[in-house]
Amino acid sequence: MALVGCGSALPAASVSNAALSERVDTNDAWIRSRTGIGARRVAGPDETLTSLAAEACTHALAHAGWSPESLDLILLATSSPDDLFGTAPRIQACLGARNAVAFDLTAACSGFLFALITTAQYIAGGSVRRALVIGADQLSRWVDWDDRRTCVLFGDGAAAVAVEACDADANGLLGFRMRSDGSRNGCLTLAQTDQRQALLGNLSAQRGGFAPIHMNGQEVYKFAVREVPAVLAEVLEACGTEANQLDWLLLHQANQRILDAVAERFKVPPERVLSNLASYGNTSAATIPLMLDEAVRDGRVKPGHRLASSGFGAGLSWGGALLRWSGPQG
Ligand code: COA
Image (cartoon, rainbow, N blue to C red):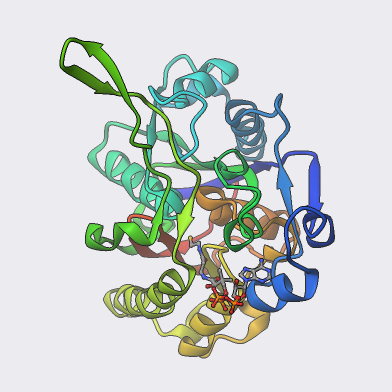
């Protein structure tokens, strides 16, 4: 599977730390020093997950030089769908990708990496030739804007990567590992509320609805700085790759301190650690493709570059992959 194109889309409105401090008891210095975040994009009512993701896909298709009809698969990683029955088919309809099958995958901030790895299996099996892998989230709809421990962290965004079957020498997924540990699920949740509704006689049913994001920040932080280096070390070893052979660290953008800790573990210098936290915060499933798109567009990531990537977050779930960027073919 080769990584040949990318695209992204962001909501228009940017909310700075200073602006947020008008609503909750926080300040720019605290947020920047603890997280590296300076601002985040927040989607308005008309900027749906579907519209942002479809725009990102349109850019990725143009970058790859593909028609929508040539797609076999659209895989959307998201935890904040427009429709719990599935949002990917809506994106398919917007694109006019009538020959593709489209469905959603949920794995929180690991979602994009898990979706990319999943897509690689379809391509390796021969049933898919061309696919769009999307990471998109709008957690602004699910944070408690009065909870300063969480609302400062998250932002909205969508990004997509175009991938296709290729010869072995162009392979863009050189190795990977995926992990989850549901026993630690309570550290970070966006879970159903416990609301009953009387149905008939003694019979009652749950009413659907979700509580805002709940997080034990310190536990999640400890989890990330322990598991991300471990899983990346496994991937690099399996690929016979030394950290000094990497062109970039392309990690889930949750917290600059986590990026710095992982970089330090592998002795990757700061100038080879991709980070856009300052502008966008944590856009969950979107962070990795959003960061990739930015770095491809501004020329930092070039064809042939090797990137060590890791997604991690709720589940708890995490994974690592060694990627190679190909860029548009022909
Ligand atoms: N502004 C100002 N003060 C804040 C604050 C904010 N936005 N959020 C928390 N605080 C306060 C706390 O109330 C606490 O005050 P207290 O000591 O008077 O009770 C103090 O800051 C320290 O809180 P603590 O939670 O210990 O801070 P921390 O150093 O662990 O940083 C996080 C908090 C959330 C930034 C950090 O734990 C983190 O980044 N965790 C990982 C979160 C993450 O990445 N989640 C997504 C994973 S995909």
